[in-house]
Length: 214
Image (cartoon, rainbow, N blue to C red):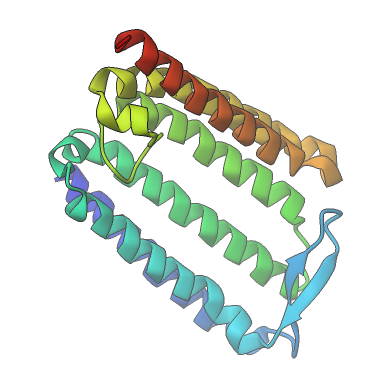
């Protein structure tokens, strides 16, 4: 039942994105601010129609993609074992895109909320929960740390995701802290994630060698 409720929440968030766009579209300027540089200044604009629709269309695409993935994975029986955690993660992703849509909408209505606040906090929350989900995930082809070594051995999958889960929780905390550093906030997202990714890839290889010495 919880899985069905979460699926309806995901679909509802995609629909809500269209509602926000439709309600705000009549009040948008002739050229919508749509892109900001690292200093938080506008450096790109779009016509109001395309600027309003980009997030709803993206939300529908993501909604369909994320709901299909558990159904087409060859190891979908494994995915079912952590499907509730997965759906919660998708809800967070959809909420993140909605928060970005609201930031863009409010900026164009005159309420200038810096993306240097929205992005680090939003990414941080997603990264922290991704770490939580990793710790309970089972071997599959779409979700998690997928290297040749994790995909070939359940023991390597579990060990790598135990380490990766902790690392991505740290990434989440660092990302949220990034909003305190203004123009450098993006470094607190990219640098920790790249570091954690490299460490988990190398660790999965070394663990596989250890468990399969031949």
